Every structure is written in structure tokens, then in C-alpha cells.
Length: 475
Image 1 (cartoon, rainbow, N blue to C red):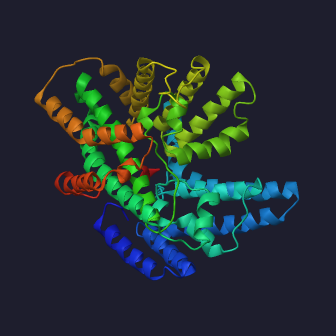
Image 2: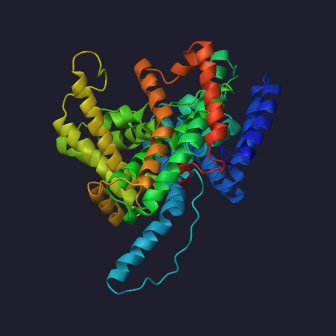
């Protein structure tokens, strides 16, 4: 069920009306949300509900066993069982075809044929997100940083909460479970912020991201027909598309949660204003980057083992972060690329300014040049991420410097790029200046509602009518 579909709008209106009617009975609200979450997910394919149910059952009982057990060796066995069960399901559905096809291709290089029938495994929507979410629960209990919940149904809702089930943010039990397990009161500030996030999210998705997709798909799918400026416009279009598409889902998810009295974590913090790779990952897909940091990078040793060990840990973390996105070599290369620039910046940029760049200690030229360099590196990364082959990566990165000629087609796609990106650029500059992602909510009423009217009009006038899937559904 897509957020940007009429089916979902009707679904949420019905669920929300019932939710408000049960406002004095939070446990009944939880049961309603649990049923709604399973209906929401089962709308794609009811058979995959069994995967969520299996993860829920395993981690609920493993969580209690970890909490009550004092024997270290047995606690390790319990944790290993949880992790292997979750990663086993994730690995089978997400990576079987990738490794099978890669193995067959390797044999083909030596003139041999694979003696098996490749299975066409369908990837369950959102499996990477809820798998990481439920794994963090058992890991935190193992580390004695969290306690298990007594209510199985509350835990089931934590795992399947429909606003963020399919594409995040990846919530931690210490944040979301206490909100599930206690009465909720919808405050005016939450309602105002939630309505803004929903509207801004829909605007970014159907007006900006889906229109940028038309340009990006045109260039990337027919890349051999383009050079120079056309390629650059296509790359910039995808750069805008993926930010607006993914952050739109997170904003809508946070907005839906807020109008029900929940607070989900912020997943995007203006990533294209980053000054270096570390700063970028503090801003982009924060729930995943912080998950990888806490449950992979730190357990590997983090930065405690010296320069070589630190670079190794960064490389492994980013490689696995790339592979998390999908079973394809371009994601592996993308992860390796980000691992490389993280390592290089750690060596050569020993005094990062991202904590307080405009404090007056550094010149504006220095800050803006570092921001531009990081943006260019991000563009290179998105070429790798979006490309379907190594040949395409090489072609686009090398041919962007050739054939800078104008055509009517170039003018058309360039105009559309600027036209649909300009509202995003202006609003994000204002948010960055105010250091507040909800700065528009705090505008004077007349200006705020004029802006909201602008969003609504553009959604109806320029919004792409076909309900396009969010990019991160495939991950």
C-alpha cells in the first residue's frame, strides 16, 4: 500500500477515525494499530506476513530469555540464534539470486555451466528495515541497555508499526517501545508538525521526486545516447530525486506518527549541506548509519585500534552498508567508494568544521568550497548507486566531460530540473539557516498558510498522477 495512493489515504482516514474514538483506551488503540499494520503490509502480499510474525515471535522470546539468563555462554547462544535467524531470512530472500547468478557467471567465464536451476526469489518489501529494527531489540537486551517488554502484542506493534514499516526510519526499542506501552496524548505542537511533515512529504514525492525521476530515467536508461551537460543534468536530477523520494517517505511516516501521538527519529538532516563524508552520514539515512555505527563499526573496534584497524573497520562497515541496499555489484562499489572517501578524509582532513562551521573560525570561502567538494563526491556516489553496470558507471563518469553542446532537449530537461528543484533549494536553505527542520511551522500564520496553499496547488497541478513506488521499497 503506497502512501501516495488513494487506497492508503482512505485506509489511514478510517484507521485514524477509529484511533481517535479509542483515545481513552490506549491498549485498544495498540490492537487497532497492530491489525492495521498487518493489513497495510499484507496488501502487497499476505504470504510475507509470516516473515514478520516469525521475527516477532523469535525476538520476543529470545529477549526474555536474554534478560533472565545470567550465564554468559548461553546468552551468546541466544543472541546468535536471533541474529542468524533474522539474517538468514534476510539473506535468503535478498541475496540468493545475486550469489547464484554471480556463481553461474563465474563458471561461464571458464566455459562451464551451473548445474542448478536459479530460483526467482521475490524480495519482500521492507525486509531490510524491520529485520534491523527487531535485531536491535535483542542486541540491546544482550548488552543490558534495554529491558524486554511484557506485552507480546506491544512488541508485535513495535516491529510492524505501519508508518515506518516499509522504508524506515529504523527505530530502536528504547525510543518507540515506551511510546507503544504507555497512553499517548496528541499535543497541538505534534499535530501542527505532523500535518506539515505529511504535506511537505507528499510535495517532495509527487511534485519533485516523481518529476525528477522522468529526467533521471531518461538519461540513465539511455545513457549511451548522451554526453556532457545532458549527463550532468541526469545525475543532478537523480540526486534531487533520491533525496526527495526517500526523505518524503520518512517525513510522511513521522507526520503520520505525530498525529497519532508518536515521535519517530529524524532520518534526514539536510545531507547536501555536508562538509565531509562523516558529516554526510550524520545527515543521510540517519537511522541506518547510526545502526551500522552502533551494531557493526563499534563492535569491530571503531577507531580504538590504530589507523590501520580504523580504516579496516570503516571499509567493512561501508561495504556491508552498501550491500544492505541490494544484491548488486553497484551497491558494493558504492559502499566501497564511501568507505574510501571516509578513510581519505580521516587521513587528510584532521580538523573537520561540521560541528559549528559558521562560528567565525573559518572563512565562508573555505566552508562553501568544502561543501561543494563533498557535493561533487556525493554526485559521483549517486552515479555508482543508480547505474546498472560497471560499464555504465565508467561511461557516465568519463563522458560527462565531453560534448558540452546545447540542444532543445537539453534546454527542456534543464528547465524542468531547475523549475522543480527550486522550491526544495529555497526551503532547505531556510531550514539550514534556522537550524530547524520544522522552521516553516513557526512562520507567521499568514505566510505559513500561504506556503501550505502553494504546496497543495502544486501537488494538484504538477504532481505526477500515477502512484510511483518509493525508491527504497526495493531495499
